[in-house]
View 1 (tube, protein in one colour):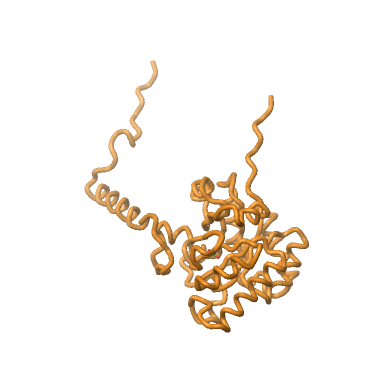
View 2 (tube, rainbow, N blue to C red):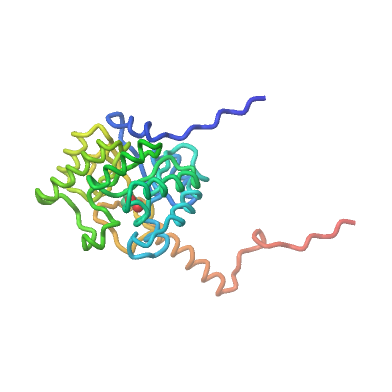
Length: 276
Ligand code: KIV
């Protein structure tokens, strides 16, 4: 008897090859049940360090640890059979040296089974990206707005408004592409610049707040599902209002419990008559 062949997940190389073919569909994922649902529709799932804010209530992503990324990376991998899975390298786990970056990336890949890692940074990280890709670690780069640098940048401001900023992002994107990144996230960047970078490079750009001019889009899933409402970035469309749905469900539940109108016999164990 032969078992049916296991469905293969998309590889980073498959994602690169989508450039010019069709837009890349991508979301963040943090848990097994949501990954199962997203997997049916997405090419790439990112276990983003945004989990620090949307799941753990941290104010920024700076406090996220490698252990948190591994736990959620493992959870997502349990729910996925098709999408390419990328896990973020958290703040402080890769910036010190290319060797530190390799150690962290190798640990995350071994312990989760993910396909690639993502790191934030432009020209200053090009050497690290080349070091990782030369040693078997596919890298998704991340340029433009870099949330891990919130403390030096003083907030989450969109990027590329003046020529100095635009030149830096243009230069960063070219540097990470040359270094071997299989794709790059461009975050919070003005449309003309995102369009220009997308046209100039053979590596796909996946935008978040960087316009439909990119080769694909990624959103923080809790944002687009209306689950994380601490703040709403201007570019995020809510495709559902899950926070409202959950609030209404819990309100109904609480009202029933308070009225002792607990769920009926179909949800209750009854004493079974003893067999004679
Ligand atoms: O951590 C994250 O969710 C990300 C996306 C914003 C791209 O890096």
